[in-house]
Image (cartoon, rainbow, N blue to C red):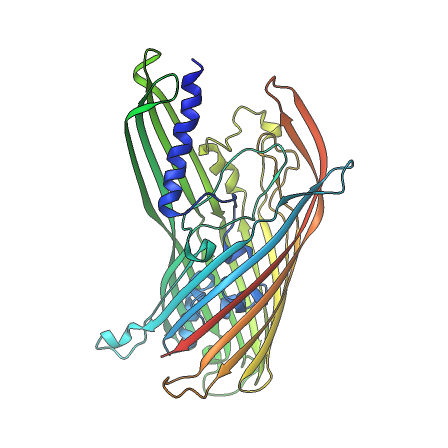
Length: 449
C-alpha cells in the first residue's frame, strides 16, 4: 500500500499545478486582494483608500461605481503596483523569523466611456472596467493553500486576478447611482489514471476548467449642494456623501482525482477530493464624505467588513476545515470597522499632492488556531502621492495625467500560539509575536478622450 498514497500525492500535485500552469504558477495564500489590501490605483494607494469612494478614475468600479459619472470624458488608464513585505513571527528564543517576504506585483489596465451616444436619449450612461494581473501580467489564478507549523499571514501574498466591470448614470440633481460586478474564477480539475506501485502511470485523463463567478457592488454619490439648493448658495455647497455595498466574494479551486493501482486498488479506485478558497472578500458596507474647496479637498470613509462569515466558508474548505477540532479551539473571525481619512491639494494647474491614513483592525479573533496557524495583526496605513498633468500634447485632444503613490503599512505586534503536530500526533505549543512592515509603490498613466 506504500505506492498508492505516494501516487495520490503526486496526482493531486499534478492537478493543482496544471490548474495554475494554465493561469499562472503557485503563489502564497492570501485572504485579500489589491483593492482592499493596498489600493487599486495610485490615488487609492496614496490616500489609504480614504478618498476612493470619490475617485473619478476607473478604480471606481470597485470602490463606488457611481463615481464614474464625476467626469464625462472617456478614459484609458494603465499602471503598475509593487508591494514589498516583511512579515515576521518571533519567539522568545530568537530575534524573529521572516514568515513571508515575497513581493506582490501587478499590471493594471482600465477604461471608461460614455455609452449614452448609442441611444436616442440625451442621458449619459458610463461603462468602466479595470483588470489587474499578478506578476506583471503572468499569473491570473495562482495560490498555495496549506496548513502551517511556522505560521502564515492571513491577508498578504500574491493576489490572483482582479477584475471589475460596471456602469453608472446620474439620477436626479447631484445624485448618481452605479452598479458593478467583481469577477472571480472557480477552477476545477479532474484527474483519472492507472498506476503501478512504483508510481508509473498510464491511461491518464486530465480535465481543467475555470468558471467566472459574479458578485455585485452597488454605490451612490450625492452632491448635497446640487441636491438641496441647486439654484442658490448654501452651507451644503462643496459637501458630498457616498454609500457603497459589496457582496462577499472569493476564488476557489477544487481537485477531484480517481486512481487505479495495479494489483492493489481495483476499480472504482482511490478517490481523493480537495476543495479550497482564496482571496476571500467579506460583505462590506461603506459610507464616505468629503468637502471640496477651490483647489483642495478633505474627506474620509468608514467601512464595516463582515469577516465573521469566513468561519462558515472554511467549513467547505477541505484544507482549512476544522470540524475535527473541538469547537472551542476552532478559528474565529470578528466583523471590523475601518476608518480612513485623507486630503488632496492642487499646487497649481499641473501638480497636486495627496495623503491619507487608516487604521485597520484585525478580523482574526482567535490567537491559537490549530493546523492552520494563521497570523494577523492590527495595522496603521499611511500614504502619500503626487499627480502631474502634461498639457502640451500635440496629437492628443486632452492632457496626459501621471500619478504616483506610496504607502507604508505598520503591522502592530500581537501574541499568537503556534500549534505543531508531529507524525505521532504529539502537540507542541510555541508562543510567538507577529508583526511586519509593508511598502507599496504604484504608478499610472491616464489618457482622456
